[in-house]
Amino acid sequence: MADESRRAGDWQRKDLRQNANDLMEDPNPKKWHQQTFWIVFFLLVFWPVGIVLVWRSGWHVVAKVLASVYVVVAVYFSYNMFLTVQAMQAAGMA
Image (cartoon, rainbow, N blue to C red; front, side, top):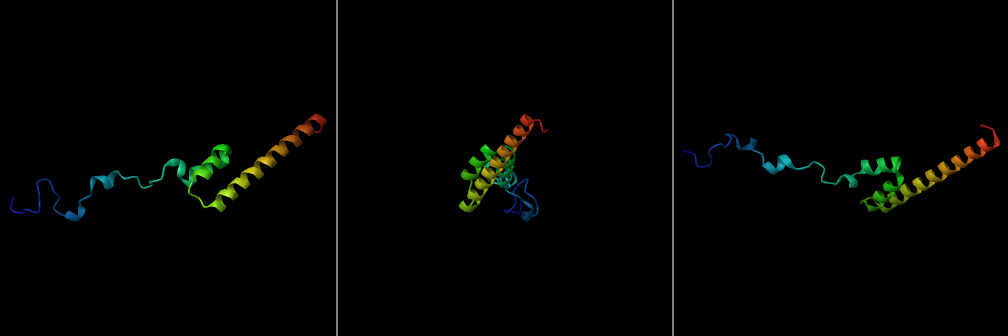
């Protein structure tokens, strides 16, 4: 080869080359349990796991406390609604 800067199999334009590791890198380096989407998903769908994920995440302490208070209030109201419905059914109102 006359040109020493090129090897057999190289592309003619060096700016088009890509490092093989760049092609395989994950665009989101966080693990699934550290991603905000999954934390919020579990807070809404299965709150015990969501609370654990919130407190193990890198969220600010204020956000962790607010998420925890939200879950506690939601569970409290849900339980009170359940008791009210049970009382109404026992009284024959529903």
